[in-house]
Length: 391
Figure 1 (spheres, rainbow, N blue to C red):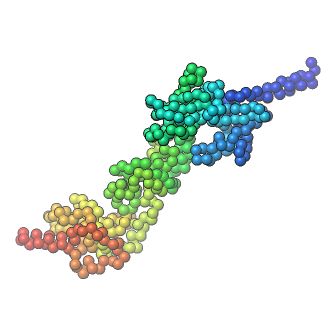
Figure 2: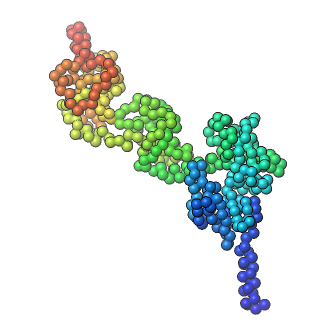
Figure 3: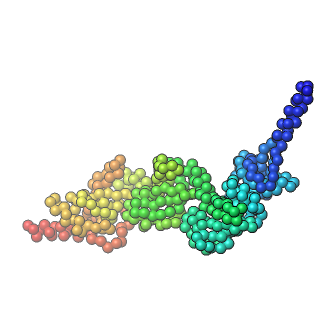
């Protein structure tokens, strides 16, 4: 055999190898090369090209979930006039052989939830009936009635007796989809990012916020707003749609980073204007927010709290008397006695009710809380009365 004959033989053999033989029911993998209005074209190797309905490439929201260049796995449903593929075998069209192939390859199969049975649901798959346990119909707990009559994609997890005994799961597909979407969501969660989320649960220390695909972050009570928040439930409730800012992302368990969120960072920090609005010697309206052993915290405006030391309420040696009369919600006039912007501290002292200094409250001061409460002038008078009786 001469060189020319050998070259021809080699080319002929190579051409035979390059031609792939395809059969219906065969599971193949290919690359999407084009997406049209109704069908997408898939390169299945060599000179082979197949089509797949665009409807099979859409997610539950109707959005195409693949792009040109993506690899897809599908089953050949027809070889007549060209290869036609299916990612999700349509109920009523799938043969027993295709169901078995779907079981071996993990390909989703469409099924209709026909009725509730003991422990789960009866699902119609082509001409076969399958069983889906209650725990495998959805990710979370749901009411059985809401699934009856619905058509879902299932994965066959057990295939016995030639297809007469099928166990299917919808949850495994939902879990896989959620994990894929969670990875996309996590890539968008970086410090400084502003995201929309939904309040998943409210706790005493804060709220857990679902940022999408089950990825949750913690919105601590101290990050809700610049004003002090006594109860998270006063501000948020489960199901609320909110906008948050990512403060920190700390590596936690695998695929479960600890995400710290904030809301107050989306509003202007009131302390940035403190030097423009407050001066030592000014008299401002304030409201007591909480009482401690060493004094009372007084809100001068949302997000700006001052401290009135215990010594400003009563003479030395009788520091406990003032706490009986000063309760959260008490309002009055306060004199600014010290300002430390760097440490975010303002010192104040109560001004007696009815005094000329109390009447000099700045006109731009925030409105007082209308909750009935003891006034500081009355308190001062009572303290003076106590001292006189003890003389």
